[in-house]
Image (cartoon, rainbow, N blue to C red):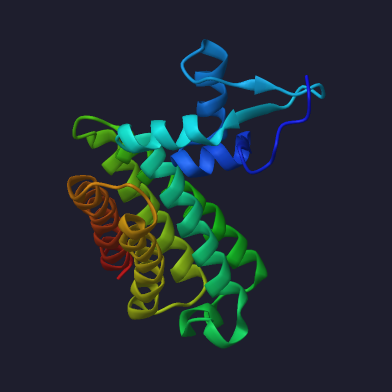
Length: 207
């Protein structure tokens, strides 16, 4: 096969980004014959830009695509905010290195819960129970670090704001419908509310 012109063909990564889906999803579509694909002599998948643009124009953004894109943005924003010394929130002063690692693990757990909740088609009370458990663990770690309740809630709100900010940027960067945007924000808020209430409850029980 001859070399494909770069301006007419997209790599798997570039085509996935244009569609707003994970690369494994597009790979599965290509392998099943749902999307035309070209294989280079080196074994790499290439997609005609015209095919991908046509598919993107007629295909509504799926819950998976929304969740994948949103999670990537939210994680990048959170890491950026926490890495910059000038932007670090005051509550981080209470945390040592070991404490921060524990909070990172809980933050990743919370992200997984929100993603699963986004993908569910019904009200999944078991996921909301997991969110409450995350809030309880937040409260335990915060109290061990000597945080007052206000600082613990500030930390929880920091992560909530990161999730919401990433969601607010989604409609301008993707083919996201208004109803999808509203659903994303409602579900993020639903999970975050459970976390915040559990943090407060954890402090009340300790007192």
